Length: 295
Length: 198
Image (tube, rainbow over all chains, first blue to last red; front, side):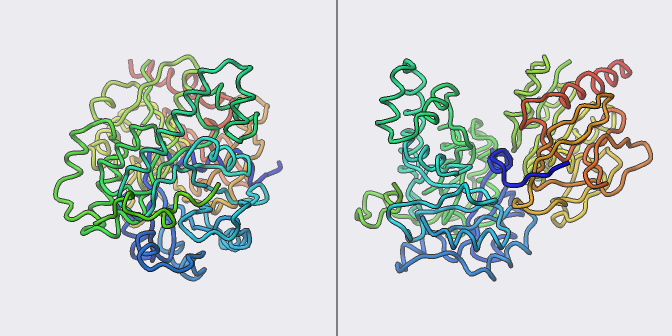
């Protein structure tokens, strides 16, 4: 009997198990416990939530290993962590800590403005952000086992998440409607490998799980993204930058499962206190838009 | 026979595809009324703490535990195995299960995601063909009750068990194109159990 680790099926399969769930950003063990108790399917361990990275500025990097290990010790659900785009040594460090998924994330300051991490070289699976189908397929070609639409992190403004989901799914629908001999040009235009383009055209979906992230702050936001075809949602600043994190977290979990039932979403939305204040993406000067990082 | 898939969270879609390949038309179950409409149920892979909590909030925990005790055939993979177990180790504090299967299951027993693996293993359904088993942060069975049959093991840890109308695997047959376990559940577990009830 030979046991093989780090196979495509094991990496992509891990993301399949997260479907229909909410992954929450946490900055310490206490928050991780709150997230787990609220029904999160996983937590993302990071030093500052995107809203604080945005407010405080400076270079944002991988989290302190001590802090990640404290979170791993505090909860029984999967623990993810972020590495900078292209920073393969941060990724190696995170893998050695035994994190369950690495987010190669535009929320941190990129380490490489040309290349992403060669994710095939790792046993641990990676999730990467994308704003459109071409970007998603380039990341999958580099070994990403899960994709999340980027949205605009740390804003509490869901409009970019919406735009990116429409973009990705719209392009998938367009591919599905094409003649086979048109897919070569489509691949060229998407700047993505032909084999992946063909696979998406045939199946009508990405070959990996597609979550949504960036700007989700309420149960209704989470349900909106699920009805746009997301397999699940990441909530970053939206929970722990709100008035009542435990209750809001549990409410978002309920709304994600019953995204098609407005009565459940209404009940989940009651009495949550203040949502995160948020920033309109339109008010952000272009250099401060995180979604534009990564290519 | 109406077969449901518990659809609160997890890889519901994969179980539905596997069941369709076995010739049944599954429905999703998120509400007590949907549970009442099915004869047999599949508990998918996913996060057992999340599924248990949603089941409690939406009033499924009690009725599902009652149906299981009353003989409803149920198959659980991975998180589904945990949810069927009478006793769990390395659980979240206060974590509940539907129970009914007299086993003790250790959560994430094979380790974290970097230890997740696939392997060809023997599955004791009468065939000697090996089955491709995918283990993802998988549990194993640490104690089996006296009426529980072990159908597969890895390094002497039971990873597939059956007790009458209940079947559980710590691996994910729904992630492969081999539907032998789902077929076994429908033909050898669910159909005989339902005939007995009638």
